[in-house]
Figure (tube, rainbow, N blue to C red):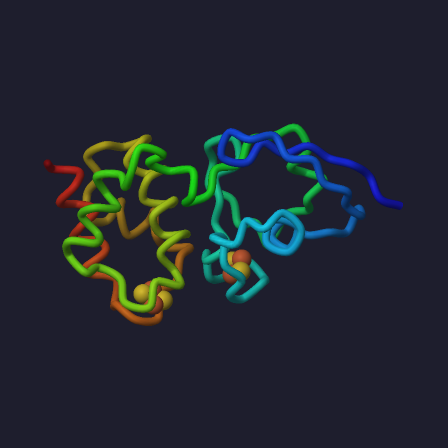
Length: 152
Ligand code: FES
Ligand code: FES
């Protein structure tokens, strides 16, 4: 049986009818047109579907849409509403990504880290990104850029 839920996505309240078994990632992408969270593994391993749920990093393939009812979601689209953030600008300037499939999840994870810990060590950056896989870069350009931004 479907139920109407309300999720605030990047500051905008959205209503959607969902079944109890509907996964949040699918509802975001297929029903609400929010396609920046990507589907990689679909089972919690890759981090490409990462969102912020009430400010906390969550893999949207691992939770049900009904669990987000009444909560706030931020996707990469909701960062830097006045333009790219300092971190995003630095990642672009350093060509830190290649295909970009992982970028949404990694940027959200890094943003959450820097909000909690503005001066992380390299180990802390690696730990914060440990749930986000990147098949292209070897991670170092991304890690170096996060550290560069944290020290600027
Ligand atoms: S698609 Fe969610 S963790 Fe891989
Ligand atoms: S840049 Fe291609 S997966 Fe990370």
